[in-house]
Length: 334
Ligand code: ATP
Ligand code: MG
Image 1 (cartoon, rainbow, N blue to C red):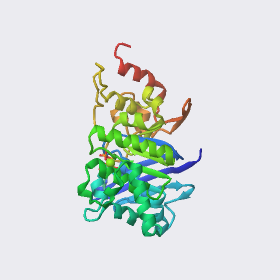
Image 2 (cartoon, helix red, strand yellow):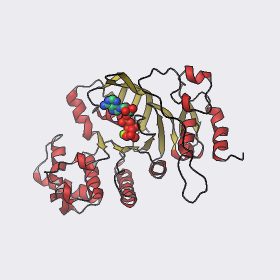
Image 3 (cartoon, protein in one colour):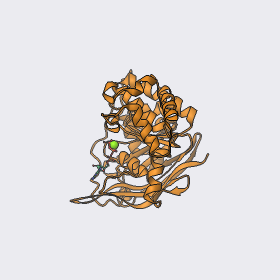
Image 4 (cartoon, rainbow, N blue to C red):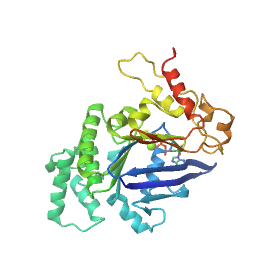
């Protein structure tokens, strides 16, 4: 299965008055055609920065200092602005948390979708109307509502309209940044059910950014765990959740409360490092119960481990001890 997207050695800094903040450090991963991948990690770890870098929409003070972002083998960081603009939406579309910000309040929803298409290819009126009709049916909104303005839509319908817009150019990949956080759980479930069906039919790859591990467990075959700008672990979702190998992933899983279980959620003590600081070692070392001196001095290499569901990756000097540790953490009697 070919990689649609391959990110290699990616480093991104934000320039600030106080100096450069290392928001992404040595990021490497691949997304395969038709794959659904969850990206999780606590607030400020760099999830949105990664998606913005892929889309080429970093704010002005964001700098890619090194790395490659290959879409079907072409490094997007080397192409001219026009090619880059075309790749955006046509090849990779982004859905953000606030559907309201993505929609123009004074334009009819259907017209906005047509405009988005027209920015990439000519489309006549008849074809445009047929396309909007089909897209609205796809996302589960009555097609006649295409004539409405965004304020006439409920929150869930707006998010569906944004998904319709993302699908309009049949992209190879959709990146979704907390797409349903603003919605209630029932609407959220309905939208994800629809998104999964659409994904199965259209075979686009999906990167889903969320705080919610349960959402990843339900919707994504693979998960990538991010901590303070680095990917610390990735692998088949079920395997990672059942047997996490990075102490941070273990902490993340223990911090989730399980409905109907007496197990109390345990949050990870401490807070992430200041991204302005120069950190030579593992970025989790300060908070890690397994840290030794090597962890403070040396950034761990990515270890790739063969697994039943494909491949797993973990960046930890002590990953082999982590499994015992996970067992002890989740069951103090062991
Ligand atoms: P959340 O879950 O809260 O959305 P996130 O994982 O998406 O968080 P980012 O928004 O990517 O995190 O931010 C990563 C880091 O970069 C944070 O420390 C943030 O404060 C910093 N940052 C983000 N945008 C800028 C900016 N424009 N200038 C300077 N620092 C920034
Ligand atoms: Mg974010």
